[in-house]
Structures are given as C-alpha cells and as structure tokens.
Image 1 (cartoon, rainbow, N blue to C red):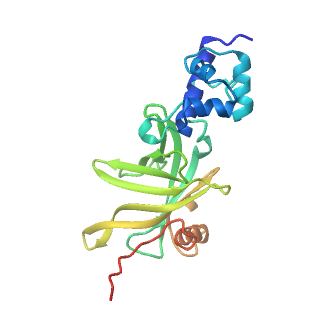
Image 2 (tube, helix red, strand yellow):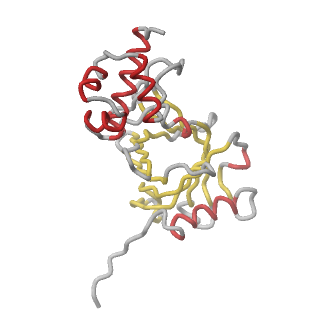
Image 3 (cartoon, rainbow, N blue to C red):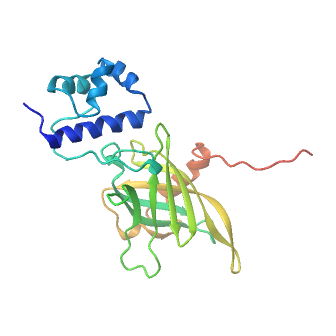
Length: 244
C-alpha cells in the first residue's frame, strides 16, 4: 500500500529521533538495519519504499507503521531528546515522599502526576492538590540518553529544586535525592540534600499523602524506600574528611 504524505513525515521523524537518541551516524544506522548508505541518505529526506520500512522495523524492532498516533513527539534537545512513546510508562499518578525538615521521624508525601506537555515539549511533573493555598509544586523532566537516572528541575521565581531519581523499576518506584532549601533553625533556612522517592499508583487516597506519622497506613512502605536510598546505594553521601 502506498505511503501517504502524513505517514511519510511521521516515519522520517521516527528515524531521525532514533538516530539522535542512539547518537549514531547514518553509517551505523545503515549497518544496524542492513541497508546501503545511499538508501539511508534517501530515507532521511523521505525517499523510501514499503519494503525498506518493513526491513527497518524487523531489524531494529522499531515501530514505524500503523501507529495511528500521528507525528512522533520528541522532547527538546535540552531535555534529552526522548520521545513521548519511549517514556509513556512514566505518565501517571505518583506519591512523592521525603523526610520532614523539622521532625526527622515524620514523612511528607505529595500527590503528583507526570504528563506530556506539548508546549515544551517534554514530560512535566506537577502536584495534584486542588485545595492547597500556597503554590503547587511542579518540575520539568530531563532524561539524557543512556542515563540510568532521570532529572527533575523546578524553578519557582528563581528558587530552584533539583531532583535526581533512578529510572522507574518493575515495581513502579523511583529513588534518589533532592537538593533544596530546608529549615535549619528559627527563621533560618539552608541548603539541604535529602532522600526522596516517587512511587506510582493507579489511584491515590487521602491516607497516602500529607504528614505521614509512625503508625500511619503508608509509613512503613515510605520509610523502607527512603532508607533504601542510602542503604542500597541509590545515592551516596560524601563527607570531607581531612587527614588527622
């Protein structure tokens, strides 16, 4: 069946996205797909046959036809050039949890959602609370190619928060650290690095968020995951130790 212009453009974008994501040359793409270099040169400008497309799909396990989703959506260069389809497992509802700044036995948990923002374009994480009086938390997601971690950067009027998390695992959990401003004493705040987790759920109820005290429904789950950040070396704390 002839390839229409819309599908042809989508295929071109998908192939260019693959080359950019893998950081390979056209020659390497040709080698992987078992095509001639001249065929790939024509391919990236839209000159190709159904047979060429089917061969690429077969050799690279890359879906190019019959997706029904229109053009491939790709995050901007500064976000890591990931595609919406590649990161679809991240979309959904999460609990973002961290230790409280003033009480080390308390956990603060927030209902968050990850979604694709076409205006960036990239993944965006934002707080889901509706009746919260102060500003809702949000951040943009950066995923460099071949990185075992994702990065979240939040900028609220110049106040930055930086989060580094492990990629989502089979249990739909991520663990890492956040660098932000935390309460030190009185009215004084100072930079702090704290363990954080983001766990994905099909639904989130009120007992799963807010101030989670010892004995609460989710306290054990959250505390075990937060302790695992250091114990399982999802993050490493480095202290300066001058010679004695």
